[in-house]
Image 1 (tube, protein in one colour):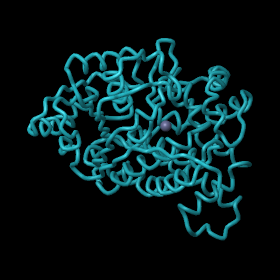
Image 2 (cartoon, protein in one colour; image 1 turned 60 degrees about the horizontal axis):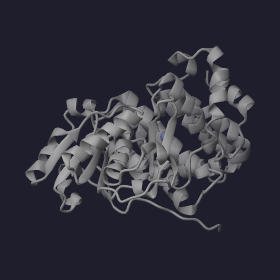
Image 3 (spheres, protein in one colour; image 1 turned 90 degrees about the vertical axis):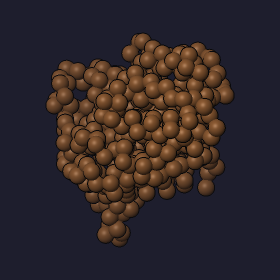
Length: 382
Ligand SMILES: [Zn+2]
């Protein structure tokens, strides 16, 4: 076995209603800064957790100005607000954008350093404020990753990657996800599946702990996605999705994602597609491209999802895996093709060129993808 390292949040709380019991997790802190977005406040998801914190004697500042794909100025405004409030603990409560912003608030409020100077791996320095992450979507797995993605003024997305960005506690409260509509449920759920698949097949840093987590994640997501979409108030399905998303996040925090995310990247930056949808649109073409190299690993995943495939040859099992993933997409209430989201055939060469800028992720792909390949893949997705 090759040597490896594995990092993950030190504490995970998975409990219905846990969002109403956050105060003890802040251990003696006096002023909680809650990072969220206005939509969640309007949906009424923030009120009860905040009331519970105040009842426990904490001061609370709610900062609800997070935007999707948070721009630098949004992150920096949140940091300023936390400092001005005198907060000594941070709670991220929301989707991936809120959790990513909360990571940087916890870091930069305690250790002033220029955001522009800490993009990339392990360039940030601590300390940071105590950080609790409470996801309200089952998808990004941000509560279990050391990465925060920020949109820079030049329309790029850049990541701060630092062990300091793992939270002290990740809190899974499936009750928070019951009201998520079918489309975002599907998009975020597919994103989580892609995290598990790409972690399992990554060319770099694949390791046995991530493998075990990715398999279990995919089993949970595969079993519960359809039900979570069709019957949003099914708490068991929601719990399965939230746990699957966390496990996939733990996996890809250590065994990084690859070409599906790389090809999804320009769809987000140029056409503002939600991250999960962008992944969904390019997923099957990339899986097919990888098949000649990753086939045996896809076969392993296929057998983990369908034990009747034990004894079936790798080639057939790998095909069954791709067909199973394609079925999930076809049944999801989301756009199926690039042409359905306003992307013209003439846009595809630009996308292929832009995808080549995401070498950080392409390098992890089991099979090489050059610009010509990328154009073929986008054409297949169109
Ligand atoms: Zn993702």
